[in-house]
Amino acid sequence: MPETPETAVTPEASGTSAAPPRGRGPLAGRRARLLRLAALLAGAAVVLSYPELVPTPYDLTVGITILNFAVLSTAWNFVGGFTGYISLGHAAFAGLGSYSTALLITKADTPPFAALFLGAAIVAAIAVPVGLAALRVRGASFVIVSIALVLVLLLVFQSWGDFTGGSRGLSIDMPIEGLTRSEHHEVFFYLYAALLAVMLLSWWLIDRSRFGMGLKAIREDEDKAQSLGTPTYAYKLAVFVVSGFFTGLAGGLYALWFRDLDPVFQFSILTGSYMVLMALLGGVRHLYGPLLGAVIVGYGLEYSKQEFGDTPMHMVTTGGLLFLVVMFMPDGVIPALRSLYRRFFGPSEASIREVTAGALREQRRAGSGGAASARSGESTEVRR
Image: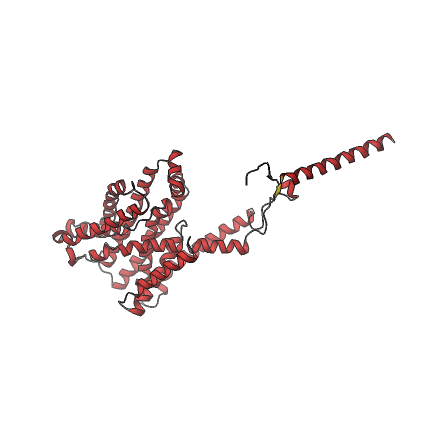
């Protein structure tokens, strides 16, 4: 709190030293870093051993589905988490990535994994003009534009039957020959895990860069950031293209894994809604927020489909999760858990106490009076 004529903040006035509060010293910081590293290594070990631990092939496909959700939600979080722009149209980039990869394989005889990266590059190139138009608006207008993009692409890919297969869909051959179905799923589980690791590392690096600081300034107050000289439009467009590239990669990897594409499913607004829900559930401002949200939502959806079949109960489950997030954890699960941890294990008291200016003057006057009395006593003793 800034010093005013009425208040002053000083460690001397409180009679305490300026030592860091309990739990905030260098040792505690080092311990926290070690705990984060241990948690990261434990999580990586669980992911890498998951195909060997699951009892059935179905559980392996559930794991791939959850990783697919995690990749999509993390790709969305490059825009939503950094800039605060809520896009419900990222399913358009996922669908474009899927169809670009499949069409490069079927029409141009491109090798599957070369088609994967080339298709993502095509999506990034398309994201440039889309971003130039969509990022000129904010708030609800941006949401409407993103939804319109999905609907337009759905109509295009449904109607262009000679090229895209239309409503019949599009199928491709298995990208790696000689694999059994179980081996195929296992390979793509690790490919999804590798893509997720690359995306998390990219998000972490941006978060700690000058570019990331500019993006977060846009999220907090775009007008103020622009008035301070931040090139807000260029920053938004750059991260929008990065997000489109990673979303295109996720869509292309899905095409290689699943191998059967349907435009109604690939260009679904519901997919974009799941991306937003998963990021919000875990915490959009946290590195692992979308991953945690994907685990919760992905497992919940698979459980609902297994228990209730083709009924719309999975949508009811999704709506219930969204209600719980908005009502009790508006910032997400991870920030809520952090707040709970600080409440019970955080510092017990501050190291600097606030006192009024009047009390501070009285303390100084008393201190100076005591010092004067001591000096007077010393001089009297010398004269004697």
